[in-house]
Length: 426
Image (cartoon, rainbow, N blue to C red; front, side):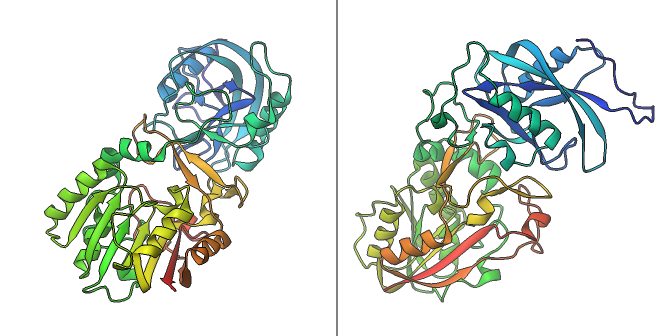
């Protein structure tokens, strides 16, 4: 399908721009991707893989080019299925998108974090109303997905569409339901990229409860001078060193040997002799004596722990009576909201978990499973482990200084990013 350019760079026209979109299906799911914020058209919205058609290519060639660039795959046998007329709410620009059903010919899907999108997922017809997507695109997609499966496609089953499945090297997995990601292996795999690209030395030696708020801002802790503290899931050691600088004697524990190796070097680099580290899961801390710590903290960790009951029980065992546990996790409401203004709730508040396709920019980053616990679940779990909740902090951070890779101030003006819980052992 050879298509003329909609307009030249020097021509002022109200003619809509021509786009090509790839409809790639698997087990009654369709591949969708979210445009990066600030990258039109439809910035922040979920779309089919979609691109403008160049002057010297057919609409089908545009589909092949775009899927190769963004997802590292070759597609073939493109069949035209629909035309949709779209208008971008940001600038009222108009587009005509020709949708082509395409088959994966070769290559495993690889999400290109440096490309046009910041996330990608396989969605079912039932999932589509829960993401921010142009209605003119959503309606035909729902209709197409609810039709009989195309030839040689597996039949739909409820189990196959029980939840939206993130894009993360699923091609080699067995038929749905897929096994959960291995969080330990994934954390180890991204250790270098996490420290090099995401965390590292970006905050100095401040204790950061979130990406924007530090202990200097929130004053969550009591005086820790001379106290014995343990950091659960210490990663590269930043939180342990920060506590050491506040005067505590600190032990950091993490299940990733690469993170622990980084933490030891980090402590030396920042002259923190009272911070030491050990490898192991936080669900089993039997190497430490009971009632041997005054303080335990876990920042950005507990939401990735499946057996939270074991982790909290171990924390309670290690703490002396009256000792303090402070958790900082993603806020349960933040987790279920997506898109850009107007933000949408993409799944139920009571969804038990979802799989993240990446925490770092690496295109081959493995998935991790995040366990989505409600406020009442956190309270019940802490009470069952022998803690009394002493305080809850939901920092409003839209006026805090922004950092790279962070949520927008517009988002943070409406939603708390983190839930910080301070509890005391009874």
